Image (cartoon, rainbow, N blue to C red; front, side):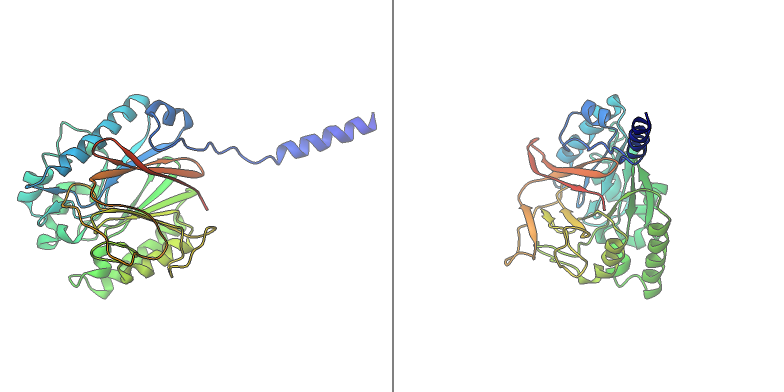
Amino acid sequence: MRHAVVIGLTLTVLGSCAPVVRVTPPPADAPAEEVALSGASVMIGAGDIASCDGRGDDSTAAIVDSVLKADSAAGVENAVFTLGDNVYPEGTTVTFQRCFGPSWGDTAKRIMQWIRPAMGNHDLAGGGDAYFSYFGDRAGERHKGYYAYAIGEWRAIVLNSEIVDNARFSVEDAEAQEDWLRVALRDGVRKCTIAYLHRPLWSSGAHGGHGGMAGIVRLLQEAGVELVLAGHDHHYERFAPMTSAGALDSTAGITQIIVGTGGADLRGLRTPLARHSVTRIQGHHGVLKLTLGAGAWRSAFIDVRGRVWDRSAGECH
């Protein structure tokens, strides 16, 4: 009898120490019903989006809206991200209304209900007045453009890379954003975090990487952020997990994905390619879709013909 009691107590202790089950999210291109059953949330979007003389933004808007419709019916939580340069050639009131408005800004679609934009260099006309007026409080504090929000089990941090890499902003502006970011990273209560901005630290595209982003990415990586999304170069590119110094780090590195394929004119790649570039897609407009679970993420690039490219995945730090 004594042995039976000891065995029972042992099993009780072992059972109480069992790890918490964190349901792995399904593939990013899974049906909305499957995503809903897993409890995952969805983020979808791109950068470098609308121009009045092109139709690529109409096609990417159709993809985003179709995903939102299906997810809404299934009860999946959504967010639509933009990665800057929302409109071309510059972000005036007229171009937002005439160029962005008929596609991503179409009020008959669901996009504007869930949009969470980031600012790019083409959005800065007039100091960004039209950008902030068009998106309202969803763009963050006026003339700052950085903010954070919760999406399911995740925390999303939106940064204004123009503050770092554009002469219109002062050193004090850059320091204020970094100070805000430190607080946002410290006070976040979610296990998993994604960040997005316009200019990438690494790129094989026409603009190339922007070394000025290293300080921001270092803060993100040191805080355990999983993903950084960017635009600016008009192609798709995913990098292996790295430190902000560009060293491979599969344990604590940050995965950067460029998605500058939202509708603007597409561009090719430079040679040699950026270090540790894993996947590159050029010549196709499309969007990135992410399924975000309690401890993991899944992603896929979906082009305007509905083809799915570069399914990828990762675990939260």
